[in-house]
Every structure is written in C-alpha cells, then in structure tokens.
Length: 150
Image 1 (cartoon, rainbow, N blue to C red):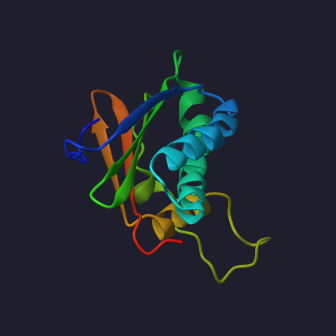
Image 2: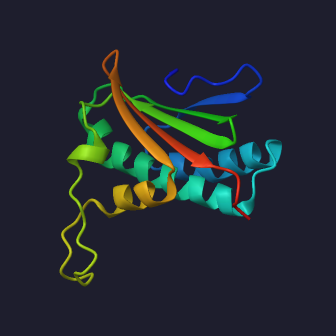
C-alpha cells in the first residue's frame, strides 16, 4: 500500500476490517479516533466516513462474498494537507471508478437503476481517486483536502 507516497512525518493507521457489514459500525469509531488525533474537522470526518462507507459496502456486498477467505484492509494517513484513505480487498478485479454505472441525476428515485450512486458520491467528495490491482488485490485510494473545510 504505497501509491500515495506519504511524507516522513505523516502518521499512518492500518486496520484489518471484518469482511462483513459489521465493519461499517467499526468505521465510525475508527474515523472519530483518527480525526481527533489529527484535529480533523467534523466536515472532513463526515466526508471520509461517507466515502469509505460506500466503498466498503460495495466491497462487502459485491466482491467479497465470492472469495473463500475474504480480506479487507484500511489505511488512513494525513499527508501534505490531505487525508488519504486506501481500501484493499482480495476480491476479483473491479475498478469502481470505471466499471460502476454512471447514475442519471435527472431520473427520479423510482426510475433509477441500482448501482453507481455511491461511487458518484465518492467522486464528488474526494479531491482525487485512484484504483490499482496489486498482488491480486484491489486497492482504492481517495484523497480529501483538509484545507477550507469547517
């Protein structure tokens, strides 16, 4: 997990998450603790929670059920004025930023097909997103600037 190239003074937290929806309950506490340790605003913490909740839910719901020994890992760090989150799983290759359907915001809720809205929200809140396939694992990196949040 190194594509974001953290500066030497950054503090990194790495966590193995349960490969089931109980990970979402743990995520709230993880982000609160990380946010307090790095003096992140409530807005930054909320954005981070929303993005990771969507990505983790997708991984758990669609990718990991097909894997005999599912693994889900999260890395958080503050680097160069941004929070960087990396989520890794050992599911089949899937780039949500290219393969998830684009939602049509002009359609009503009843008319919209399932899928794509969560990834759309991640793209709205993140200042940058990236996907890599590394050593048989999906790695999603989102970067969210801290400055200007309040």
